[in-house]
Length: 94
Image (cartoon, rainbow, N blue to C red; front, side, top):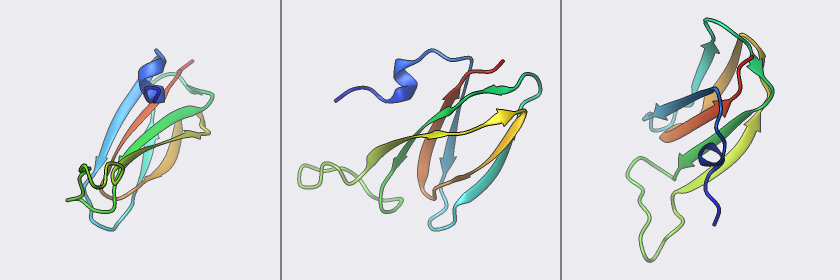
């Protein structure tokens, strides 16, 4: 198993988001004070079926990591974070 994208790349900008809501997703606008997003944002999300979920010997993959790319350009973007999850965003700024 290879490491998550955020551990494989050195980037100019990264951010970690925690969403503890049980059911509601969290829409958030991220604004940069200076610079602009330069290409795709690498997103790694750790998530399970609920806040109390945990991996066990019987269910080793109940909580997993999903890796995707988000398109962003300019000084800001809006993204919806999944409920009860932890997300890391990594990208370059120009």
